[in-house]
Structures are given as C-alpha cells and as structure tokens.
Image (cartoon, rainbow, N blue to C red; front, top):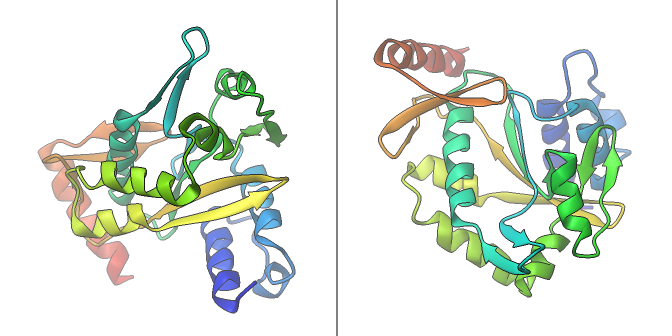
Length: 222
C-alpha cells in the first residue's frame, strides 16, 4: 500500500470512529484497508448522522427480473451530501455504496446469487451486485455514475467531493466510500438547503439557514 493510501485510510478512520475509540496513527499503519473498513463498520453500528448506506446504484425486481440504473438514487445521494455538508462538524461524513441499510435489501442481493455477510449489525453486499446487474466493467460503472451526477444541481465544491470515490475491499467485497466535509458555507441542493438530523434529511427555514451560516464559518475558523 502506498504512503498516500495509508494516510487516506488513517484520515478516514479518525473521522469515523467515535471519540472514545480512536486508534493511534502508529497502530493504524499496521492495518490493511480491508481491516480498516471492518473496524469502521463495526463501530458505526448502522446509519447515523454521519453515515448513509446504499445497497447499490441499480434497482432489481426479482419478480420481473427488471434491472435499471437508479438515477433517482444518484439525486438522493447528492441531496444527502449537501445535508451532511450543512451539519456543522469537525468530522467527515460518509456515503457508502455496497452496504445494505436493512436485511430486506441484503436479501435482494441474494436473489442474484450474491451472499451478503455481516460486520456487526451491518450487511455487506459490495458493488459486485451492481456490476452483475449492469454487465459493466468497473470503469464503465463509474462513468455511468459520473454522467448521472453531472446533471445534479449542486455547487462545484460538492460535485468535486461526490466524484472523489474511494474503494475498500474486505472478505472479497468492495465497498465505495464518498467523503463529505463542510465547505464553510451553506450548500444548496436545487435552490434549497438541508441538514442531517439523525438519519433524516430536513429542509432548513430562513432563521435556521442564518444560524447555519454562522456556525459553519465558526467551525472553519476554529
């Protein structure tokens, strides 16, 4: 693993692990990206204010065998990314693709002959499900996502973060991770502003937006 990759993984873990459970940098250098992913998901305990899990970018109907690229899901990812950016925090937030947010989603993957496995309470499917459904190479898969993403009404800063995808492999399954940080200003989605409250995406009113602007600037100055 390159030094730059190790530093990326270290930053990822430091941003994700709870304050009471943080490895030292020396300890983190001992681990592979797969081990780091395992630790991240074991300690996330599910979707939270800084985590969003997506099974995949393709929809599959087991009854009709219909397979479709879910452009609405890409819009959902972009919108949730702005809500993460609008939640003042010194820690990064993450959208992870290839992770089931419910057991019913993981069963859906089983219909394709892809058996999910658990890390703590979380079911890991990996992007093999999407590649199986689409019949695309990994490069074609990324391009399909980037093409859909280019239509999303977000700022250049948000677009850059949404395109910066990292991959982590554990137990043969590859999970994609998109890191979202505050930009120092409120980030709109299609002219409206949202923030993360627990696992919900909530639209901001004008007083909330004014308060958010002040809080985001304060976090950037600290």
